Image (cartoon, rainbow, N blue to C red):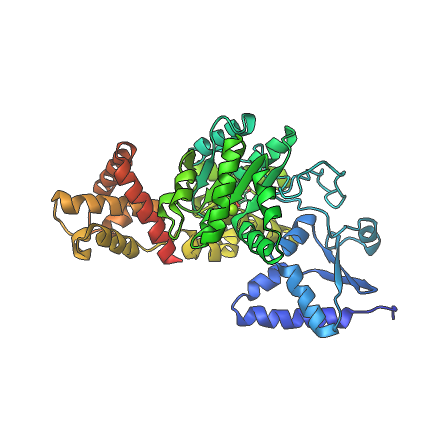
Length: 471
Ligand code: ADP
Ligand code: MG
């Protein structure tokens, strides 16, 4: 027996985790992600074999590695490191030993490290990079479609002409639509262009930083840090709602930076006007520059995003499977990535070619979750009826009076955007209307919102509200 042998802990940890997943109804998840083979032990370390760098990185980013570690700690009473070795399932142990993988090496998927396939375990040469920014969040890796090309162009413009083109710029939109990616792309571009002090900070950290500085009696340091930045990228400002003292600090930082023509970028999960508990002076500052929204990508863009992500990761999935994912995951890019990651992992683990049928089976949770587009038509009808102060039965009824017909068009429009129902199915849900009537309603609102900004804002607000309610 080796001097260090943690095999029993490893096996027990897996057994217990399997039970935990099973109880939570996620046994399949366990089977997919806990297939690493025990290879051996060293002092306070367990070596396990995984099929690819991609798989290992998924284990890390999905929190499975930390879950394994805490289970191992619980069982063994020690903090054991897990060292991943990349090995094909049937590879000889000798081959496995030749390709040790540092657990620190960066994600192959979605990562910048464009290693040639098969060398994904090697550490990338050290590069000059900004400590707060993800290297892979660049303009090159951002795919544009109608949903985000305005935001993309604005981001590009300010990185070419910081502090002058538009200042500040605010990107807003729902989760997983690329706000952070685009903001960091600006940061990376400015960094490459040699702009001095670029601060990227999630609003939550900004708030914590502020409170810590007060406690440590270092408020002045905090002020200096932000007020002397050459560019400030503040992510998720909705987090500052009701945090009045922090907002006040941001207000002063904003003024200092604005006067010095330093570029600022903010992101928010909704339009600034919909934030609550905000200092008005600050919100008016936010709105003083350019505000651009990011929308969910359409089918074509979703396909292009998937293709790009696969290319970056040096992975491949069959075109019909890719199409299936693009068709079914319409919520946001993060969900798209998750679906793709699952399919790639499945193919690697089972060493089989994925078919649309297996993909459908593997992704049914994602396809069926409310996040996957299954907002109910009824919820939409109710929300719209409430908003326009008409009755639920009117929405489905026959009246052609404008007061009733317009909300009905709006509800149909929203239902066409937020659900996967066909126009025929929607017609059935709206008092047995013909599918051409549905198409007419949708087209009508589509056209109206391009000219009527009040209606547009109302429709967008309703859509957000409906999605929030369904969560
Ligand atoms: P948000 O900040 O809006 O919640 P993120 O910027 O974190 O969203 O994006 C979620 C994920 O989706 C990231 O991995 C990001 O790289 C990816 N992503 C979002 N939009 C795009 C896009 N247009 N092209 C490529 N990747 C995208
Ligand atoms: Mg974000």
